[in-house]
Amino acid sequence: MLWRPVPSQDRQMSLRARIIALFCALALGPLAALAVSDYLGAMRTLRQLVAAQTRDIAERTASDLQDRYRLRESDLLLLAENTESQRLLRARRSGELSELETAWASADAYLRSAWEQFARSYLDVELLDWSGASAYRLGVAGEQFAGRGADAASVAEVLMVRMPIRDVRDGSPLGSLVASIRLGVLLPPDALEARFGRAGFTTVLDHNTGRVVFHPQHTFSRITVAELTGPDGWDIEPALLARENGSFVHRQADTTRVASFVSLESPPWTVVSSGAVDEFGAPFARTRLVNLLLVLAAAVAASATFILLTRRSTRSLEALTGAADEVGTGNFEPALPPRGKDEVGRLSAAFGLMVEKVRTMVHEIEASRHMAAVGAFASQLSHEVRNPLTSLKLNLQSLERDAEAGQLPESASRPLGICLREIERLDRVVGGALSLGRERELALVPFSVHGILGDALDVVRAQLADQRVALETSLLAPHDRIEGDPESLKAAFLNLFLNAAEAMPTGGRLSISTDSADATTGPGRVIRVRVADTGPGVPVAARERIFEPFYSTRPRGTGFGLPVALRTVEEHGGRLRLAEDDRAQGAVFLVELPLRPEETYS
Image (tube, rainbow, N blue to C red; front, side, top):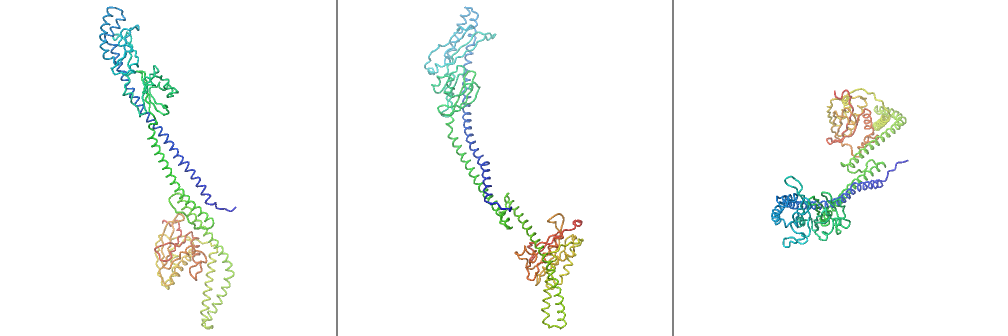
């Protein structure tokens, strides 16, 4: 089954769908949850604010009520524990009439004087003896005190208080004190008017009698606590108010309210302060609106940024996928997206490197195929061409000697020379083809690279001098001994020198230099030979083909010199390449050969 590239549009759409689903799950989902959480948090904060304010009001009101009640208790203790009241109750317990009359007269004078100070706070006060009988009474039940600052409603409402009286000398029981404290004294208007907001109010409940002691709406003051907190009222559990303090949410007149309460032991009252949540909802609604707009703006910004990044990434991926499709069709130079620092950029760089290696591999395969073709061609050529060429060459050389001896016309010498040169050229072509096509086994021996460079230069030195080509050598490599076939390597360098000489027919400069470097394809060190000329250089269009057999940039070139040199260097484990060197005017060839391991760092 042949491989068929999947259309990039299908892959991109499925990838984009997955990315969008992931974005919705990881970005828009949390943003929506944040908006809901912000709304619920705002409502919770509002209720906490109302609860905190009402709790503060309830605590202050309860503290004020308790202080007023303790002041009344101190008054009653004064009436119960003074000397005259104690003497009167002791006399009633003893039953002696003479002592009782004297004690009653003394107590009457003192208590009447004290009543002048306490009458505004109490409806009546009664001393009971040890048997529960009345010993002395101050005030009159139902008495109206018009003009003394108490309204009719507060006069009718009292708090009944009973206190035991004990003998201050031995602690024995003497009787008790019963008092009716006016509610107007315990419930100051300024404390009860404290509220949070216009719709807030404070109410006082008596958890002993189960009635409403105070409510700003007088209609509620006539009902019981059970009616106020029942299903038709606040609709809360009665046991809730039995706790020392707390808060609760209730409904009243279609309004959601938050109330806080504080319970007292003396007096046995519960102070409740209530505030309306809806009254303060407008500012929080604006805050929620602002927060919602911020969340929406963040969502829009995140979506826009995500779309731009996604478009950029998918565009790069689309270009990369298209490049992969082109490589699949045989184009090894596709247009790749920019190589950035992100993952797609690194992927593009890695893909480009892979394509480069594939292109190199394909070229090597093509070169191998060329070599195989050359081998087959060379075998046929050797059989069909070389033998007739040898016969022709011998006959032409005989005719050339006859012409030199004067046996042939002088005009025949020139055509004979041309024929012999062309036969030599054909022989070199056949020889080059044979050297490329045959598998060789090199006899590896250690030798000096500088030595074979000198030998090769000796061969071309005369030709360089005839062409006015200056020779510069700088053989500075500290180590130059390698293992290989010195004659074949000398022939490879000779090819490079002759190519350079042919590139400078009217003069120039040939520079030969050596140095050492780390191997680029493995461990160890190499000796690097640089061959540079000042000729016209290698055209850009020919740079990738100069090592191909039969390819030459010169009209009379055979196209075998550089391929043979490349094969020889590679057989020695080295590299031959055309270098990019801005310092050189013409062509620069670099030969790298691995040094012997035992001499690398000697």
